[in-house]
Image (tube, rainbow, N blue to C red; front, side):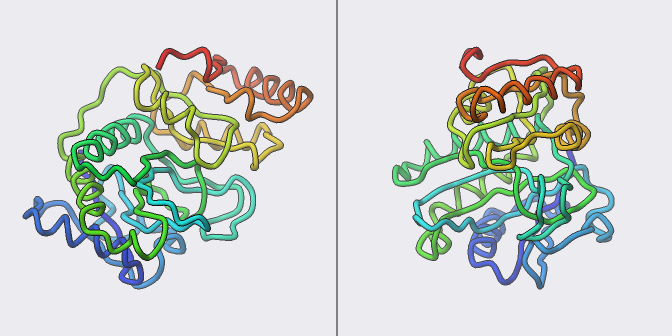
Length: 263
């Protein structure tokens, strides 16, 4: 699979990750693109001459949170409603459920081998910009300045990105995720250990779920989605859950609860 790596020269974590990639003598045919502005505000990157011919884009980036907990995270970009942090309102970027699953499994494997016990490996729900036309994801080092400069943690992410050159499609069941919190422990377990590959995740804070939101998640998944996996306890009260179920049924998707999936 042909892929490109994108980072911002304004982002200390992105710079750190890319420096670790370059230390390995990484394959020269993989473009590494430096942006002068923040990645989340870099819409329409598919027009970049080095991105036109790739299949997937990996954004190497910092992650920021108020708690500042050390983390290695992965997610697809996009906005379910407003666009406070780049991209377009009610638009998400294309992504691949299979590539996200592979990268998350590799990230966990490389983290375990590194011995960095303080870091949590987690998926995040789909959020923030940019809006681009190429399948993509963010892989992030967080969640404060202390971690952004951590070379050992950056090596874990760098190795995970490099591992993408060995990616091969497997026969997983593509799915979208619905419900739950921003950091999604139930979807983490499914992505890591089950037969399902999760692409976009729509969190409870983006509710009410609508037909158009679910359609956006399905259409912006590279694989053909046949299943919606719902975090039942993270879908609000009974009335909200009933609406979620109705919308999923109208879309013709099989419904699975996170608690029903062996993981």
